Image (cartoon, rainbow, N blue to C red; front, top):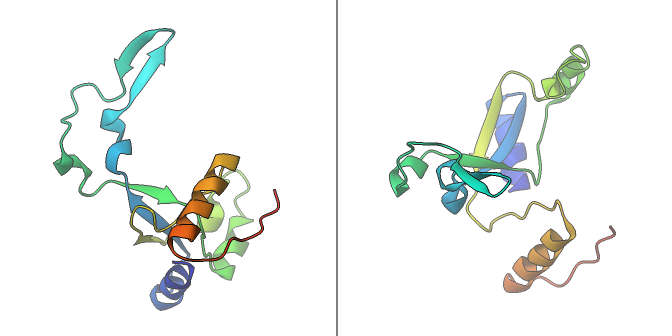
Length: 127
């Protein structure tokens, strides 16, 4: 996936590339807000069916290749923390389970399980 993202950056001559995965069961239409103990749908009136998910993707963050020029231009706009991604932002599609975004310790356990499933030896990770 990292190699694909870097190749996309080179081939497209764009500012940055991020990976996106189909949202699946995490579509906002399935989510709710909790106000104390009262439940409210996050998207009232949304049609909940597989069809609305067809073009809905969630950003995954295993790598975000960014061109050097875009990175330097980002310094010119200190009020926008995402300015370094540039204006020509591209994406590549990944499938569920292809990548594991590690934000919490439990994500490391998931990553180890994925590596085990793929037959890759356990990696030592420092937290």
